[in-house]
Image 1 (cartoon, rainbow, N blue to C red):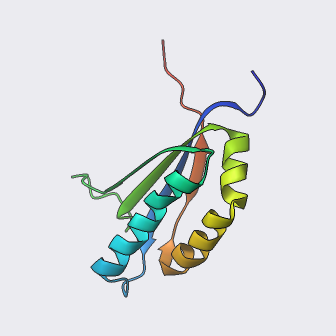
Image 2: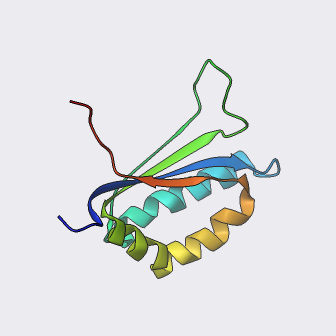
Amino acid sequence: MAAGGGVVKHILLARFKEEVTPDRLDQLIRGYAALLSVVPSMKAFHWGTDVSIENMHQGFTHVFESTFESTEGIKEYIEHPAHVEFANEFLPVLEKAPIIDYKPTTVN
């Protein structure tokens, strides 16, 4: 397998700016999900809101997870015109958003 081969998860934790309305947030989430149908290297998309009882979220309320077949797929996604256009709309409404890419592993 090539160095970049194997499934890779792309995780974005989002802390939205206070002025983002629920309608705007819904529109942004639909826009994010729509990338799945236009970016070939994006194989799956899931999102959710924090439901932890530990209250350690540090203001991050949403999690967005995309699945790719390789690190090269993430590079294609990042450079894809549809992603660039969406990122230009999405990133300015975030107060903070760490992004992590990782290869899932299982402990045997």
